[in-house]
Each structure stands twice: as C-alpha cells, then as structure tokens.
Image (cartoon, rainbow, N blue to C red; front, side):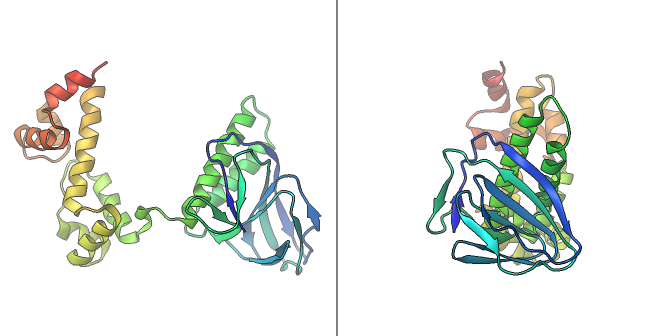
Length: 266
C-alpha cells in the first residue's frame, strides 16, 4: 500500500514514545484511528497489515494506516528498540493503489538519512515535555519528518556522493572557482566522471553550476547589503575583477549589478 500525505497540513500528534523489548514480544492486534509511524532502532519484527506482511529491520520506517487491521506475524527479536509516533490523519491524506512520485510506501529503508531517527527522537521528546508552543513544534516536526521520509524514498540529486563531496567543498570556499581537476580530486573520481555526474544531476558543468550559485548569492547580497562594492563582491566570490563579474551578472540577469540593486532595494 502507498500513502499520499498533504505536506501543507498542520499535524496533530496523539502520542509518541520509545519501546524496548528485552524478551521477544508480539505486536498488538488492533485497528487504530490514526497513523502509526514506527522507526526500527534495533532488532527485527514481522508485522501484518490487512493482506501485507512487513519485515521491519534496523533503520527502516513503517507506516501503519488508520482504519486498517494490523497484527503480529512473529515475535520481535530480543532487545528490539523502536520509536513510534501516533499522528492523526488530515483531509488531504489519502491511500494510493500504486506508487506515484507523491506517495510513500508503507515501509522503506532510511539508513541513508540519519535526520529521520533524530526527528522521531525530537517528536518523542517534545511530546513528553511541557511548553507553551508544544503543539506548534510537534506539527512542524511531523511535517519535516514526512518530508524527510519522502527524501529517503525519492533521493534528491545531491544524494550522489560524488556530487555531495564536490558541492560541499565549493560551499566551503566561496571565494574561489574550483577547477574540474580540483573537484575530481576531492571527490576521488576522474574529471570525466565528475562532469558526467554534474550533468546528470544538474544539467550543467561544474563550472557552470558554480557560476549560477555565485551569481544567485551575489544578487541577494546586492540587495541585503546596499553599501558593499562590486569590487568587494568580486573578491568575495572568486571573480578576477569587478568588470568580469559585471559581464557575468548582466548575462545572467539581463542588467548590470547596479541597476539590479536599484530595482530590488525596498
């Protein structure tokens, strides 16, 4: 079964917690009025929902749906640890008969996204902690958790380890244009592989991607820091001088930096 969640809806957490089973135990046999989201921290457990059986293993999440019968298939392994969230459904949520690019499967591996475990832990913590804005925080965390589950199932382009390594170094050194050779060495691949991965993920070369990011950053700084000079911006972002920066900026935005600043200043 697949589920589409309304990511714009506010979320209500009915309960949340952590379970530890020193000795093997059965999953409850029941039908709930809310979603049960489970993160398997440690151990193994076979759990059924209607006609499906899910083999939940470490670093997997499981979504059990409201109004459906879920039941034990086997005892959990000794020492099993889980995190769970009971989340009320919203009108925009709906089950899907088959997978689409806006639906989540009932179970998936999330070992590549450590934020998911942290979000489960944060929801458990804030649910049990008094606070004036508790419900707002829990709603925000639930929405972020759902978005992260989507990321785990449908990885963004930057999940490519080669691209991640190169982009990470680019971001750490905004005052330079790094050559393809330097980036390939950082990522531990050939220049050809680096260029191929950038084209697959971004549709542009490493140099063109760097240029786009720098010009977008500069366009923001021009407006937010009205006294900074074009010469300083050229130095800060790795352009040889302000004249070259101005030519590149005009080619990207259709106007020189000074005109762009005047147009967008409030």
